[in-house]
Length: 317
Ligand SMILES: NC(=O)c1ccc[n+]([C@@H]2O[C@H](COP(=O)([O-])OP(=O)(O)OC[C@H]3O[C@@H](n4cnc5c(N)ncnc54)[C@H](OP(=O)(O)O)[C@@H]3O)[C@@H](O)[C@H]2O)c1
Image (cartoon, rainbow, N blue to C red; front, side, top):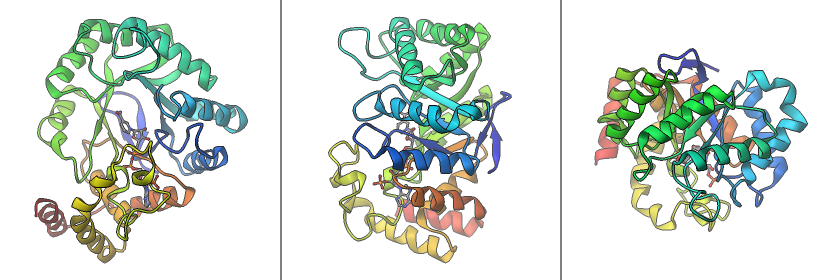
């Protein structure tokens, strides 16, 4: 595994990390999730990404992870960077959503219980709450780090103008924001416009999620929508209608990947790693095989300028 420094912090993150958004819930097969986490760890994936609401049902991915920790990984706690988040709907009433101090602290306490941990390594505000003062949300992250329940603070999905203010508030409070977690892939490139520059300027790391566009940037959908795919699942968050319109590009990218001796998934991950402003590429997987395939992206992360141009022309075509 290669490790990259998260912004100006002391924290090194693996170039590829694993997210537990899908395939680790109460509806999924525990043993499959357990094998993926153990394979990830054995291959140097030290950063594991969770959130209070991952499942389904919400909370169950943290419970699954808690069982894996207790069973297999408790003696390796100091070798792992475990992250969780709060920001989306978690429980009824006005205190189970968004970015208030009341919600974030209660939610983290619940997350720690579900995972059987004393602290997480990173606690993120999962999204910007326009109705809570930014000072309250950031002040809560600072408080959480000072309380020892998280070692580092992060934010996720913040628009650039608000992220800039959030970074400044956290710095002023003495708990600098260590990473911003954002959606980035060949299909979602807007972070290149403003956010990447902002992160560099403010010394904040960048964790890039859904690098495979939830599976679209793989060979999985080239022959239709498989039954076991995210697009076919009711809780998949990938609409069936999203598949067809991009398949022409996916076919051409896939050919290019084959010419490079890579799978499309590997090329999509390697392409992100050409940009030093990406600290860690945060992938998902539904099997150990997929995870192995994705890890091999590290075998070839160099692109000629012709290849980079060709990718742009396929994406813009
Ligand atoms: N901060 C946020 O708001 C936010 C939002 C979304 C995600 N995230 C984080 O980012 C993580 C990754 O997101 P993601 O799961 O959307 O990432 P992704 O890597 O874009 O998509 C993962 C899916 O792609 C398919 N796949 C992966 N490797 C493959 C391979 N080698 N060949 C064929 N198909 C492959 C699998 O789909 P199938 O399941 O269909 O097999 C897998 O579940 C999440 O787990 C979560 O931790 C954060």
